[in-house]
Image (cartoon, rainbow, N blue to C red):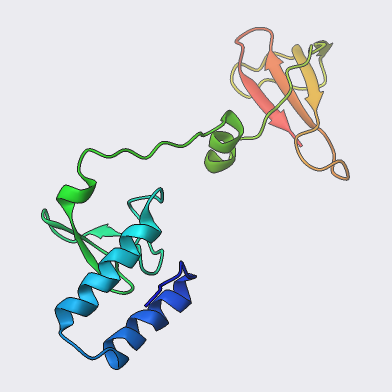
Length: 154
């Protein structure tokens, strides 16, 4: 009997069919399945189930188990193995929700139209930056020249 490498749903169907239609001991079925799973999983990621592809969980200190099909493997089989992957700076920024703000030369201008909330001084430096979408107004950043208190105005 030949067993070909199959997609996850087909492998689950194969498992059910083998248990129902192959006459003989359960040892024969298990041996046949084990050979198929070993052939299939060669070169594949060891933390994913050989049968259905679901990520295994460490159900105890002795076994890693698939939460979907409940297939267990010994922790000894995966002990000491490593998974490596590449994470770019963009991947990290995206995961953390950080956007890239281009550094630009800020031209500070002076104004006496605002009064500092902290010290009451009238002279401030300010600059504007587009923080939201272009259809909304720019945010103005003010810095008191006396006490360096900072505040914004949208």
